[in-house]
Length: 423
Image (tube, rainbow, N blue to C red; front, side, top):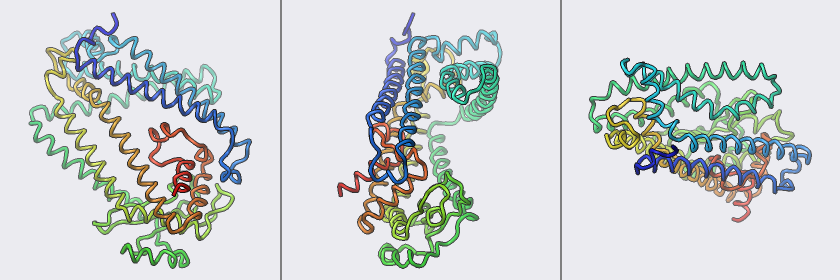
């Protein structure tokens, strides 16, 4: 009988939230699918960098990928709704107990439970995985062999990862929630700070001071006003690697370690672009990055990341309650692995909202930095943006605003140009 567990308010709220998010995602992908289909012409500015043939080919590929994503997501939603009871945590845990004869240690039962959970997730992803393999023109036997290897590797990875989390969680069962919250707060802040330091160390051998005197002469008045040393502008050696950031800002002004970094493939010969950025366009790109410095975007973003991580961890710890386990059918037992999954389910909506707010905030930062640069460089920034997007042809395609906001922390080229023209 379907939905027998939906009599509980907490459980039903969690499941309905999950279904709603899935349906919203399907709707957003559908919007993008129809939006791309309705785009008949290239943006006039992109014509020198994209032929009509490539444009139509990219449209066709993008719509094909989106259609497969729609089918895959619809498949997952249908399976999860129809078999909601059979795929519930309590059902999989009960089966795991029966297999282990209900007498083994919790860790043994946990391993079996992880096996079934991984099988469920792998099965839900199967149509998408098979499509990608078919698209590569593998034979049926090759597809079967690849899927089998992937399944085996996924089981190993999940067993190692989740059992490690269970062992870690069991070590803290007797620790008070308050102590765990304080420890989590310190750990999160330390990890974010360590990330900043690690990036600095990793890039040390790949960056060198920016020495283009003509560009620096143009930037000098702005750098002086902002009290930003020109020695903190660097060039990233890409060695003609394609997938590297074009330019970025790192560090924090209050720590005196902020840097602006621009890739050498922008100012040198770029094998992926017919013509590289001119002197004025390089100035515009650096002014965009200085806009991030001016508005303290890196520091503000780090504060937002800390808030999201801290609030999520605090709620995760606070939800370890008997009423939560009982709502999901666990009346006489408190399995550690199930407790983790249940709380992740309950925080799904919060995580989605935080992720969306974070995306919107990052996109706002990009618009602010664009406007900062455009104020001083005008159309040179627009030309630079077009060239930078042309390095990856698919980036020139326009996107539905909902889809772009949901998936990309940078606005699309069309959005950025439209924003600047409105100023």
